[in-house]
Length: 254
Length: 124
Image (cartoon, rainbow over all chains, first blue to last red):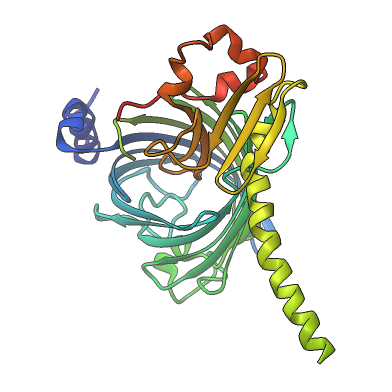
């Protein structure tokens, strides 16, 4: 086994020191893993079989309305798109209640490692900012097996470092630790033909003018949430399935 | 003139109706889990009073608390990071440690599902 890359060493150091975070006034800790398998890529009207894998691990600390963290990502392909990539991103988030049925949440990521090939689908970091407006019903709506249903919906926008604007929206229901969500997204600008573009070829896949929708389901089991998400592209992007594992621990406040 | 009158009546009616609808929404969970023999004696924006006719006992459920609320159960909001706020129901010491109402009598007011939902008193 080789020496850990610097990006993962930072994450390991952070996890090892987590026992001290409560003493630092931290309200909550989130550890989130995603394992994604991409089987095919939609490029215009053509579907190309291009299997590759992307793993990411995020460690996030929250205090009050703010959160900050690190994401380590690893992309491993079996295609001709080039060598594997690893990367590290720093994150920050902010959430605020606007009313008893509306809240806003923002989340930003900044890639801090260098040498990534954004012209390849195996790129390992993203730099973007997203803002979502979320509507919810704190008292629920409707009943199923004597337990209330909690519907919610959101609409938002994501802007990346290249100025690409994506609109996203979705709705779903939470019931008895189960959560089902349907989400759609579409970019209004970006690279429209990543394999044949002359301009912006070096950022083609990180700046795709993509669109699609995804369906996700998750189940809470104590402090752990296990989820599955499947993405279906309409215009560019991958047919991918992602397994998510989230551990959350609340120390108080939050 | 008639249109203005209708407009005023609609405006006033909306102002009277919306708080009532909201109060209905707040109490929906509590009322859903009441035992059949329990009756609602009072329902307002601030509180819900329920009575058990056989036990001759009443419970007061308040929207806000616990400070200065003469209530047995109150509601508050909880939110976990990454999720939406939701209403929870918390018992006060007055309910939890009642001198004459034993814990095994709570089920005569509420169905078991609500007893699983309700939170114990929180330290002040």
